[in-house]
Image (cartoon, rainbow over all chains, first blue to last red; front, side):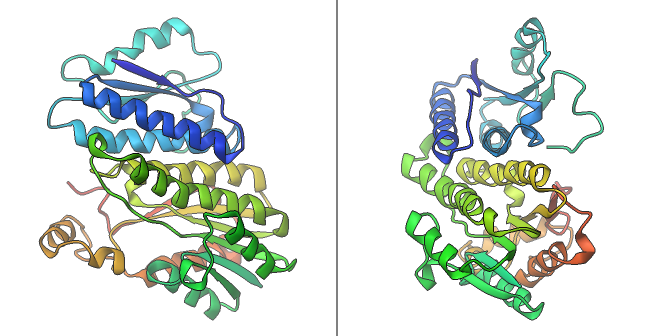
Length: 123
Length: 216
């Protein structure tokens, strides 16, 4: 299983483009190697609360994960997204990284590790 | 009233341009066919010059391309081109035009593919990115400027004409509405989102797909 954690992104297009391109290469390599993938994004970014650059990356990754998941269904390759919050315990994230990839687990899914998405828009 | 519409030479963009003109806007169409490539600094400068310091009321980021391929076979060129045009150009043009916009509306034409689509890792990422841009700008620009996204499903345009008939018929069969959407239906929604009737509506993604997002 390979984990892509979104690095810091500023508001410049070059920064956004660089991270999205890194994600493409990362995911393509993992898919070719048959390794499941997890993206780790921040819930605030899925809702656009921390600026356009970070929002474009988080929402772009979620959409890309859904498309990649469709392609992996036939051969059992899976990709999922975990959304953390400022106070998400590292231990909780660690515990969840592997969960979606156990046999029969979900794919193309977004899991919120915290309550801050409740009552808000569905990404 | 000034409106800028990107990708306005055909398909959905042309319908949006026509509709906004009918609504009384002076529309600046930014498209390769009119010699404006918004993915370049020069192209975006041309748009700014055409607005020429007048207050801008409406920006519709519609320009988009596809370069479909399975993820494992997708080339760097296929990935990069789609990202640059669909998301990079929209973002950079928006940033450059924002100082000209005191009040009004931004509409980003995303796609139902932001929910995922086979063979469209690049396209989905770019259209999901537009959703993120929509949300961030909606928070930042409220209450002066509303920012929303439309996510069209299968629409009858030159782009959909390129789909082989057997595949297209299969796609139509999976749409509860039983047909493709018309570009004018997207334009109608843009018109509403840019109107006074929609001032309380911001930060939303409206899927316009005949119910396809629910069907198997």
